[in-house]
Image (cartoon, rainbow, N blue to C red):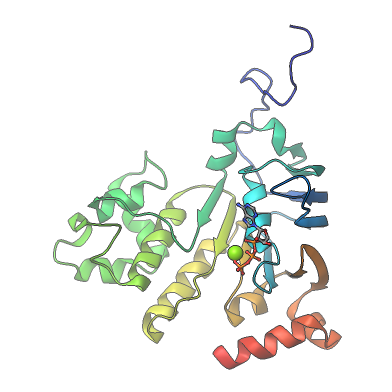
Length: 263
Ligand SMILES: Nc1ncnc2c1ncn2[C@@H]1O[C@H](COP(=O)(O)OP(=O)(O)OP(=O)(O)O)[C@@H](O)[C@H]1O
Ligand SMILES: [Mg+2]
């Protein structure tokens, strides 16, 4: 009984963290999905509360993997990840996930009203708060144009909505959560310019005052980031803000030239 596995954390050992600030540190993080194949190599980074960290890099570079490690979908092999100075291994899973809001490309919508789908981001939210979150997300105006407004029933994973509208619902869902940390995987799919602008404004308001890790596909996102991490084969090969990285004329510069064509 004395030498129980330390990783089998029971509730009594877990650090209670009611109000996280969102100070995130990755310290010499090395990780592979299989121990014999390293995917991330010696990742070091610090995000101050409220900062926006953008990840860019080729497909397979490890961007999604980093974000998966933050909420402990997987445990790392070497190094540590801490939030507000506490190793995430010592934070209970549900507490951790309550403090990290996610906007992923393929977030699931369930059969139920728009109101219920947004409330899923924080189950005790009032109708008023749901509507406020939808406004923050720039989703309110399209919702009001739906046949039954917030009572409209979404079916088949939101099949009766456009792709852009589904994204706006996802943003509203994150906006209602009080999580100080946000993980955003920007959608690559193209939507019409007007919806695109709504999404951009929604994301901007969502990121405000939250520590944000964003897998960036939009030029505007990287331009506004406090720090951009350029990942290549699991390593951060360049880091800095947009201007600093452009001046380097390295990998970021190459990627940026590619992004610019899409903008
Ligand atoms: N669940 C998994 N099991 C094993 N290997 C995985 C798993 N998920 C990703 N990988 C591998 O890890 C590496 C990094 O993948 P990751 O998904 O982090 O890339 P990414 O930078 O997000 O790419 P993309 O821009 O295409 O989304 C890839 O070599 C990939 O094959
Ligand atoms: Mg990815």
